[in-house]
Image (cartoon, rainbow, N blue to C red; front, side, top):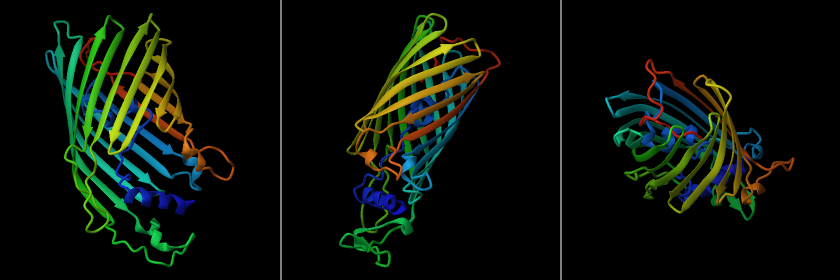
Length: 338
């Protein structure tokens, strides 16, 4: 099975699909990888977050065929009506059991402009600048030159001049708008463009390839129903090269008291056609999120010996530090919940 995943990575590489970016089912629990404009957008003094994704873990002997994890820190600097958000985000993605490794470290900044006399509307503009490194382990790569008919022969040369590591400068841009409706409801929408400069990244010598730009659009609402209940519909659409993805669904939140809130939701991803179950627990600034993807498309054919479908799990943890002076909950730094 290890060789199978190496083949997958190799074919994706040749077909320029390997350059597609990471994606999280819990996209709103990783705000700085969703949109640079969300930097510093929280009702608190600072925010620390981490998220881990293990994709199709049952289909590999060691349980780590495609693993992604990310960490971030951001904080707002408040002015009379506006705010400046500063942050740092990093992620690492290991594909094909380590055959292809991506490390990305970005500094993030956003400006949040209050709109309207009451400040219940805001427009945020953000950018990220940083460094990306991709490493290819040619010891795990299998090419068609190593096959004699349908039989794989490891003693044959790959026939490719591969470059093991490439580093590049990267830049992202984002825009986000939100509007408070009454005291407990809000709507929001945003868009972001990743890899704005389309940097060149080549693993085969004398082959020119640029990392495709990725466009992300998201929208949703936070609908308060009484003092304890909330409905949280949300969606995200991503487009990169020829790959498209839509993830949409609905979460339900119940506040037991001012310190503890429980979330439960269901989402659906297209065209992978993967239903996603989600739950989260929020207590005194901490939020622990858990989700599981159940693939229903062709990927379900990548099954281990026991016949189970290769699903994907995510675990996220976020903490928002309490500000010394609590801001107005209807302020421009309202952050979308998921």
